[in-house]
Image (cartoon, rainbow, N blue to C red; front, top):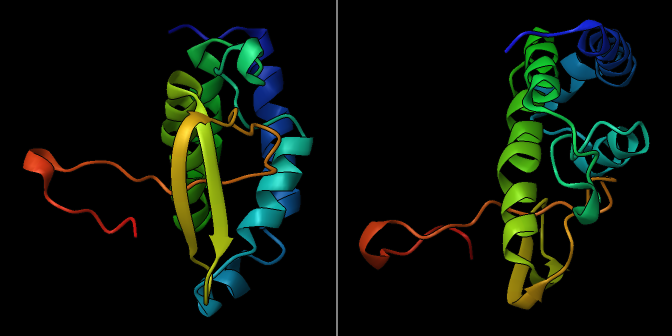
Length: 149
């Protein structure tokens, strides 16, 4: 895919936001083994950086894959892998699956950073604004159990 000047302007914006939100405390988060994901997702959602390629009807921006490419490359520039992994799972796996399937969910905090999630249909709309995050639960081959709860 050929990137145009809009993608490059987007790159400049993404880089500035990631550096502002992540760099000052990233080393401390890595040492502690946790980062304030809910606050970060909310901030990124407020900046319009989540749900880039989701359809507008699903709360996304409806942009082409070039924007996701730029987003991923800029996440890869951060000096730690955990933000890129966490954000990529939400933006590239979970949000599109929820947008595709639809439904409702009940999310209950448990001890530590985990949540107990019970699903029913129809699903709630995905949250490109960063207001909700979802664990990536899926079925393994042949119906073997997952670690989703």
